[in-house]
Structure formats: structure tokens, C-alpha cells
Image (cartoon, rainbow over all chains, first blue to last red; front, side, top):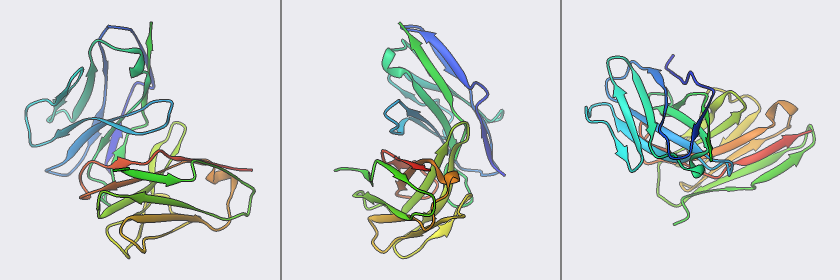
Length: 114
Length: 112
């Protein structure tokens, strides 16, 4: 079964600092996509960043970037210049579910402290 | 363009009652999904649909039924609610199965 593992249940960071959230995945697919979703207290699931497995270049979106290590099946999220609004649950997800669904990790709760 | 909407946002049921959750999307997506989110469990797939008139079981389908009579709507039904179905329910849609999904705002359901 395909799995996504987030080993850090909770993390905290000071405002304006940088934090990295870890994710490892296990897939047998040759072509797949990886995502980071953010879930703030409002509960809405918001796509933060997307990585296509066939692209070697790491994806970036403003203050958010990933470190995609395909051989190691690792997909970490780096948040630079952390802001109070970054406080949320962060979910790593992979395509490859047998029903076309996403496979989610259990999430990392990030708190940004002033 | 509203994206994915869900109705209702909150609901409290008594054990044995029934209800239907409605999901609507205006992006002309073929694929639609129902997930449940429980503390420490991430999101788990309940049922999904790959097109109008089609539905299929996901990881945790027991106690739920679904229908997709129109492409834009995906309904999730609970025929006889149980306390174990207390959860937050998310609907999602995507243009293509193995691609990013767009989520609705979620429905918090409590069964007492």
C-alpha cells in the first residue's frame, strides 16, 4: 500500500525565521505528483505547492519551497520568513491512490510564535 | 467561480437519524471525492466518482452511500448515523484522477 509519512506531529518557529517540515512517501508509480496542503483553523484545505515527479527542479511559491529527493522518496517543505498566518496544519500528499485519490500524511501542526 | 461548496457546514444528529451532505463544483471536473478527517488520521477516502452516474467505494465506505446524478453534484448519505461517524467531511474534485484536488470548506458532523 502506498503511504505518506510525516514524522513531526508538531513544530514551532519564531516569526521571520525559517522552518522545514519533513515528508517521506512510498509509491510504485513511475509518474506522480506531490503536494503540500495547508489547513488553517478555518478548516479549509489550501494547496500550498505542487511538485511533478518527472521534474528535477524543486518547486517554489513565494516563501514556500520544497526539497524533492526522488531517490530517497523525500519531499520536505521549507517556509522562509515565517508569518503568524502560517500557523496551521500542513499535510503532505501524493497521487497514486488506487481510486485516483490522494494519499495524505497525518499532518504536522505548525505554530508561528511572535 | 465558487469552486467547491458544501452544505451544510455544521450538523448535529442523534444516533439512528439520517442526513445527506451536498457537494457542488463549478469547475466542470470529472472526478469527485468524499473524505473524512479524524484527529491524528489525516484524510481517508469514503467514496469517489469518476464521472456523472458513476460511484465507487473508497477506503472507509461502510455506513455511507453516494450518488452523482449530475456532473457538478456529489451527495453523501448517512442512512442511520452512528457516533463513530462523528467527523469532519470534505468533498474534493479534480479534472483528472492523479492530479491536484480542490477541496470544499468541510462539514463538521456530530452524532450523539
